[in-house]
Amino acid sequence: MDAATELFQKHRPRLLGLAYRMLGTQADAEDVLHDAWLRWHAQDQASLEDPEAWLVTVTTRLALDRLRRAKVERAHYTGPWLPEPLIETREQPDTQAEQAETLTLSFLMLLERLNPEERAAFLLREVFDYSHAEAASILGITEESCRQRAHRAKQRLHDERARFTTNLETQRRLLERFAQALQQPTEANLRALFAEDAVHISDGGGIVTAALRPLLGSERIARLYLQVAKQEDGHTVRRQLRTLNGAPVLLTWADGQLVTACWIECDGEHIIAVHALRNPEKLARLAAVTKSPGGSSLH
Image 1 (cartoon, rainbow, N blue to C red):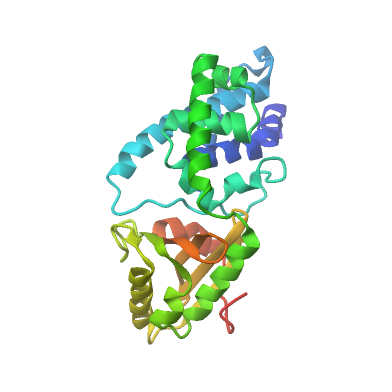
Image 2: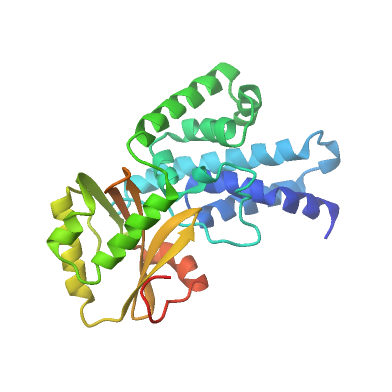
């Protein structure tokens, strides 16, 4: 491995962590890193005073351009859009070095509420710990503009996060209860899991069956899963609790095929939001590295 490649690989986890948080899918993040690598390879590296700053700047700007295009594409997406889990690899972002919570799927959903410029400024300042001056230089804007964007983003995220707990044990406990309730579902035992104003969001990408709009209320969500149980009748269904992006996720396999990855938000006692990823294109990478469980439904 030559020196240029070695240096790029050294910074790759941090660059991947930034690009993934910007875009919400591993495929898009890796495409950005590929483009960054091509530019790095063509660059006269001896002329760079700070190679890491150069790499972060290029990666951020490439991700920002890609996110702007993605926002337009997602406006025409069939039904709600959900992020894609990050598959653990040797090149996974170093969650010990960065804030692990900001890698969770629930947090990525919050980031979707920001515009691309706010998202970039927030991540650089609050997650990757660049000063406002450094972040402004990376983004090619004034320091005051960067400060305002980061502040607006932080305030919006704070207001949204106040609604739910990020306690992972509580999330896992409620996901386990949810999976158990699905074994012999009744409207009563399902409704008991959800807050009255709970919301259910599913992403089928227009490829498989999924609600095209969020479902609101515990009654409607319970009835949805009673219908799901009927559809599962006659199929071999296994459910498996895994940790993805640092938080618990419930995987559902039907006849050996991964059909859903589900994560939740909760208020400590009840589930207040369910996110059900059903788009097979987004599940393909996860399915390729995850085996369908046999025997017991929970692992």
